[in-house]
Length: 188
Image 1 (tube, helix red, strand yellow):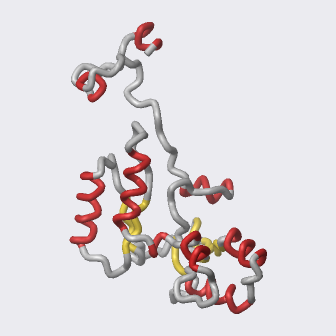
Image 2: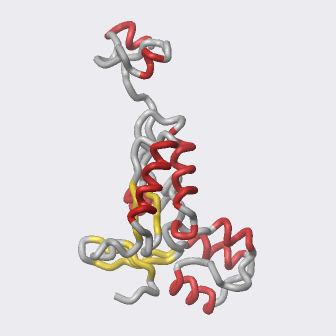
């Protein structure tokens, strides 16, 4: 507001949502953003923000080199809780998820739910919750299964629009011929 008083409002203020809502005159059209963190989270070894874990173990193709990514948080917790075994590790490496693995408490399975275990609608609800408080588009991937149909993609886009999302990224597992992100148990 102070900057707008000094230098004037942004060029398209007149007729903008700020103008229509009678909000204070501002210099910048957008002031809040959430940076996309997909690659950054890998480089910095940190959280990827509002994204769920892609899988607990998977192959990543980087510049023609295959890298194995393993969710160290799950394995550390499984050791602390006395759940870890070589068999558990092998099952997680093969499946990439805890779904169907016996002996894992429901709360742990819920905590380490992967992107493919979350319905597309829930991915969109998460994005919309953050979009509501963010001026710029929120970067979030909506993961859909390999067998998804064009209508499933259309429904995701329409729901995102209805919920006020400014953009949407849909990734259908297996659609990337190069296999940028692939479950370890998938054959090449």
